[in-house]
Structure formats: structure tokens, C-alpha cells
Length: 166
Image 1: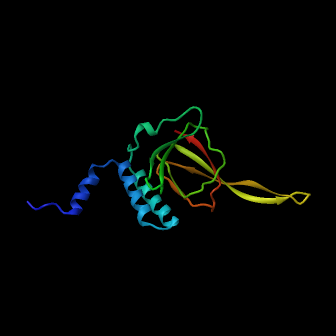
Image 2: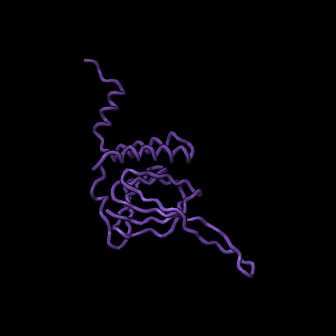
Image 3: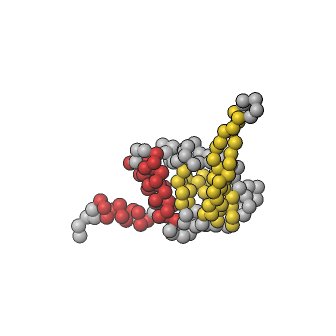
């Protein structure tokens, strides 16, 4: 019997890995091979969307909510700090503060519903000539299981997210 080729060995190894392990491996590869933020973020979004087509792959310990508020749970931090995988868990009605991101971000809905409201930053001047910034709320989007989004700062990145159901 001939020895299996490298491709066959890699295919067998992938079959033994969990979906979460595969996602982390593939995100590592994406961040290594894609050199620009935009390419990394968009390739990561596609890969997250692929995982979200499958069910029951996120271990239950990463799905526990907290009555005190939204709860970010670190699943994996890349050894080169190229990316972090988080599970954001919460109960209906809980929400994040209005915020933006300092690095690209891929959001994928595993289960439940959430509403994301975008804000735009404006500036005005008072009667004394002092400039002051303010936010104006704009569109809302309801996210459902399987939905993904990518945020690449500083464009269109100010938002607030509210849990709409578990």
C-alpha cells in the first residue's frame, strides 16, 4: 500500500479537528498570508460565515450570559496578536455602550438576535466659537444567526449593539 501524500495527511488532520479549531487555524493562515487590513478582514469574514453555516460547534462554556451585562469571553488570542476570537454573550435588552474599534473586527451571529445602531460624528460651534463634537444616530440593522459584518476603522465604525433575544 502506498504512503499517503501530504495532501491526504492534511485532509485527515482537518477531519479530526473541531470547527472551532479549524476556524482558529484558518484565521491564523489568513492573517499570515494576507498583508493588508482590508484583505485580512474580508477573508476572515468569509471564513467566519463558513463556520456559521454549521450548528452546535461553539462549546457551551462560551455561551453563558451574565445578568450583570454583556459578557465578552476570550476564546483565543493569536500568538502574534494578529487576531482574537471572542464570544459576546448577553441577555435580551442588554447593550454595549456607544463605541468604535481601534482594529478591524469581524462580527458573526452564532445564535439569537441583536440590533446594531450606527452613529455618525458631527461637529458644531457654539455662540462663543468653541467647537464641540456630537453623535447623530442613523440606521439600525437587525442581525440574525449566520449574519456577518466587517468593521475597518475609522470608516462607519461608531455603533451600539443591543441583544434582541437569545
